[in-house]
Length: 98
Image (cartoon, rainbow, N blue to C red; front, side, top):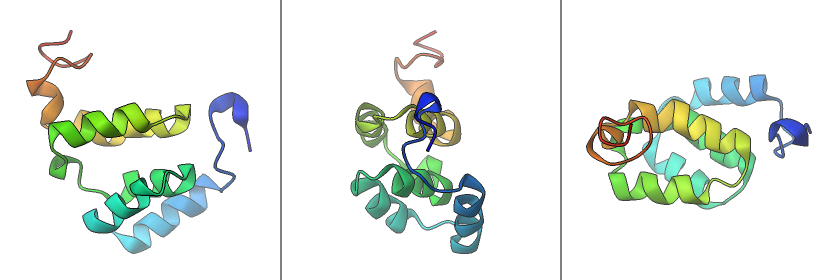
């Protein structure tokens, strides 16, 4: 565990990515994993979800509930940036939130 970098999950990220590759995209499972609140489960959820499938309000809730730096970073970079929602709202980095 490397708490200094926001790694509170205690799992090997390479192994997590390999598992995600085997699972492929599974939006329903991703939502269930996110709902657990466990950091490792949330990281896996971010790897197997469909970023464009999340409505703006759900992304907003996810951003507010991402407590660890690693989960927040992956959420922003793997999901939020690929979603059409940031372009239509006032989030930082969006066209209206500059």
